[in-house]
Length: 340
Image (cartoon, rainbow, N blue to C red; front, side, top):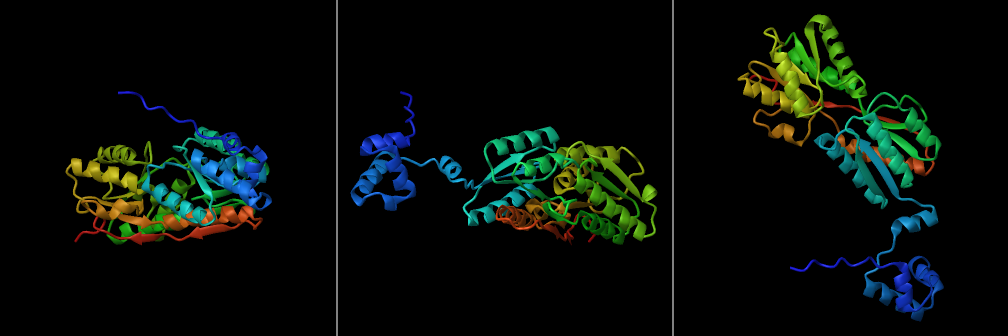
């Protein structure tokens, strides 16, 4: 079998040669057709069709000074939460014919900064970033170089820096209060590293709920830091929890992927959910309601989060002042935390 020959992409020079005109004339047909006579314009259009020529949009935007590409960096694109956020971003950008470059930091600050450098080299008009740790100095430096920045899923510490986030303190409080109302007096919290702001704020919310109920968090809360914010991390954290004979009767997980790992481990060890141990997740991703034991979860408005972040980024490009948007979460109660 012969190997197919890959055809070289036609260039603007090829079009000019075929139409027997200058490159400048082809450019005028593409960008300022009113400057070209109808006869010449028809000849150039025919050459474009014959060669299947596709104009280089990036080069044209650079010449015009109107880049219509933006970047977004999330912690883990495999997490359905960030997939839904990305869909919201795309839906907003599409309205203004912008293109999205999406990157995954894997919770690694160095990887995040590498992608930011690449985005800047590609001339993006702005970036939306879920910071992988507390530091934002590198983002402020990027903004000072003319790249618009919006913090995504993170509240801004500065009035002049736009952000879109969810009230994670309230979310952690909702989850813990629900478990307390079900009669649990000791709660395990499978949390991520405290370098991630969301983990810190959800912990703060849990502590508030315990204190409001008159409980001492030092006794009523067992916090386990999972090695990763996914199902593997949830499995590891739950195994560590079950190693203690006096483990809590309820588990609050920092996100739904972690909760998925917790549910897997509990099922493998013969621990009944919710009869022996109640489980609550966070995010309310699409699979939460479809599990064998549907998962109680704190719902975040993921699509709205991404849509609004993109909206603020485009507004910043148009010179609008910074804005900080804070959405409120909602508890969705299902079978994993309530005994029939």
